[in-house]
Length: 248
Image 1 (cartoon, rainbow, N blue to C red):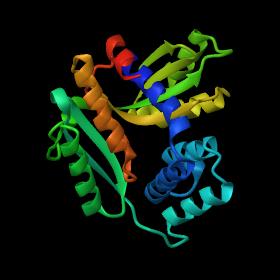
Image 2 (cartoon, rainbow, N blue to C red):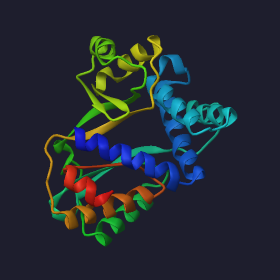
Image 3 (tube, rainbow, N blue to C red):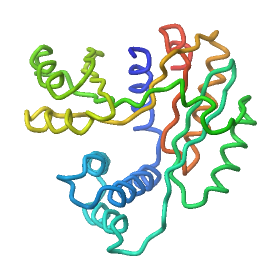
């Protein structure tokens, strides 16, 4: 998990400077709509929506935009219908790639993703071809400043977390998907700030590659993440210290 967490933090820092705010807001808007559609518009009763709202606030999205997106999701305001789709395939070196997509045009998404896989040395596979190599986990990034690790461990473990790691200026909490909302609620009730919280597909086994091959995989990941419909990309690439140094 350690390499995965470090790579996630590197990407977040990079994204903070590279990504256009309009694109970030567009993705968050879709997250809000889907969450409200699936679980209702009450933030207190919908952990998925609560997470999306927190992300929106962290990106300084105006309150009106947030409320409008939620109302579109619940059907109070007419809007575009989005569906959640996943794509699976293999990248350079046989690395498994799992892509989460939110789209209003599945045919367009398929064509775009197939093109990127082909261009960057990968192959788009069929549904289920690599999904078995990943587990759905919640990853929560908590600022370490002012926190006692054992006290934090007691809070999250009691709520259902399965792991707590110290990563520089953060504590990274790993949570089974079914306990994600409970752990977030426990942190909130304990007045513990969260930097970021996401449900991710974590590789159960990883593939180590030479630096040059690893760079090819990262180029594929970056190209996929540039697509408007793509929400997240996960791989089985082993982000060990050598790989992190090469791709950072």
